[in-house]
Image (tube, rainbow, N blue to C red):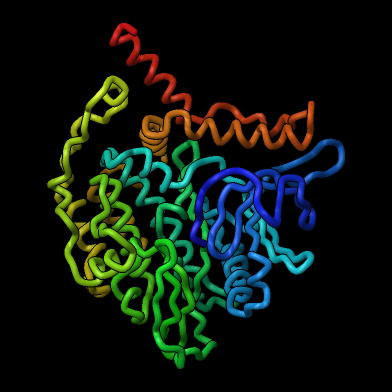
Length: 405
């Protein structure tokens, strides 16, 4: 789903609206196919727990393709058990509205982090650690098998910043596993087609071995073969990892253009705008920027530069074959990329970039809960200050002491 991240009330749905066992609290994302709400499950003796509830737009309920994709997305995501994947824990339908329920993640999408970074590169180890975790989530999906051991051929098809959530501890949680190869279906009579919609692309294209793919993706993170309507495999997801890693390391998108159509043209036929080794030193204008700006970018290890170039290859055969292989290559290129202890470095960088933004989201959620229960906020939702907020406060105190303010 193409997410527009914001908070507030919806149109058809609203805070206090009940769907099945769940009460809506705060809308946190909206897209072409539905909405995501923070919601809670309430039980006796004051027990309650937060979840993320994804709702299919009711007007799409008559569309069998939309319903099939939504149900398949929920069913497949429920089968992926991995710490870097947000699990689906429930599914239901009420009053013609389909919904599924995910574990609540206290964190921010990578898209918000990249916007806040304002083209400042991430530390090399932090970028490599993020990419490693994304690959770990993809590997769990790519290797998923059914009850009798047959590969499910699950692809993500939308490895984009909106779908990479990062917790306050620096842990990556990948969401929106909405696409699978449906080998049993024979939709190859559909002509490959693409149309842009606010940076998103919807397509129906022939899949491998006579199957078909029905998908929607973020144009700037699509693989060349995906854009051309050609058969795709797991290497299409790894191209998305390459784009994200380039963006983290350089502060810029490798194929950025004025619009989605031009971006897709560049992805399909052009080389990246500039090699990683040429990434610019960030601006340091103004007191606030001097306090929070990162030091000049670190040199890119040659092995990491080669790894990114390989991930961005136009031909799938020139890319790393599997997410597991890419994980090993990341650890070899940047020692420590595989180490969970470096999640703290990720959290520290995000704290520097986001500042108060993450804490604001927590405050908005707490306010929404209190508005539903005047005078009695739930103890389990009085979350401690996020790690990156604590880090940012410490960095500010240190900077103020050094500068004498």
